[in-house]
Amino acid sequence: MKWAALIIAALAAGCVSISVDESIVRAAAENPRVRSCPAERTQANAHSEGFGATSGVTVTDVALTPLAHDPARAARLRRIAVQPGGVIAWHDHTAVQGYAVLIAGEMVELRNTCRDPIIYRAGDVTIEDAQTAHSWRNESDETAIVPVSHVVTR
Image (cartoon, rainbow, N blue to C red; front, top):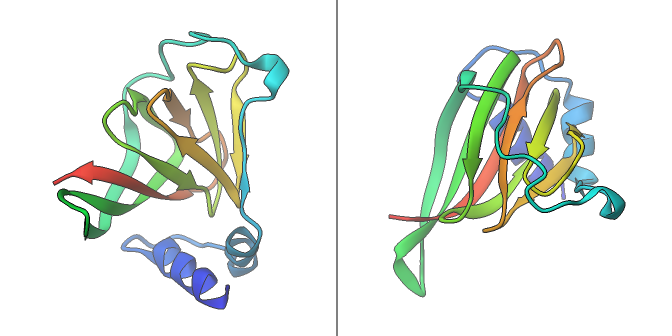
């Protein structure tokens, strides 16, 4: 688990200068938890649009590893930094599935299958399956750092 904390800390440091509390990053690496819509609040087509156009977002590709059983596809790791007030526009995951883990900051998600906004904090993981469509906004005062891993077509 120590290596996971070091990898996440390295991703958090990235290419931009931001202050990230190492204890929060370590806690996120050591105690990740999948956050999802409470069962009683799920609803098909609850949302179909998000917070607006993408703004205040920096995406850095970290690694791309071809899948041994399907060289036309690869596992991709990205580091997404979302500035305070920044938005990730509405998008779906019909072609690209994976997961995201918040390691710094706080993000709010509107998801097609949940009536309520979902709040994510350091250590929270979201599953992005083929049925997922969503949008994100950073409503906190600090930069949100979100490593994401997806299986993509090369």
